[in-house]
Image (tube, rainbow, N blue to C red; front, side):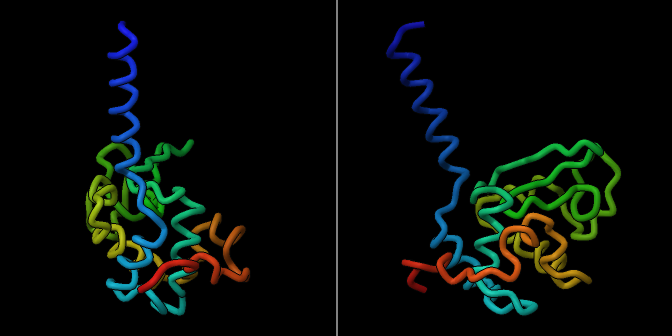
Amino acid sequence: MTRELLISLVSCLFVINQASLIHRCDLAKVLHQEDMDGFEGYSLSDWLCLAYIESNFNISKVYENADGSSDYGLFQINSHYWCNDYKSHSENLCHMDCQDLLSPDLLSAIHCVKMIVSKAGGMDNWIEWRLHCSGRPLSYWMTGCHL
């Protein structure tokens, strides 16, 4: 393989990989537009911390769990309970395909996280949020974001 072709291929892969990431302030704007600030008592900073802790702001992240289920998208929504991945048993409580949670428009993911947070436990349903975000000062997540 020629050096130029290799550089071109790597550049394309880098662009494709970058396309799945959303900037923190862009996410804050989308969440604000979708009335997530204060939803079930959680601030935009809570949502930003959750998205960072779960996926590092990667919209297209899919994580395969040992039990055969997978976690999808920005908020790592689990296929066993919330969406149908057509690979494992699912309760599909959000009534959607898991692939919809990987969409860059984020509306399916936001719809589903609203359902999850409205259930008992709220954001405590995400273990990583409990460990890294809950009860901590989070206002810095909004630093530099002008809504």
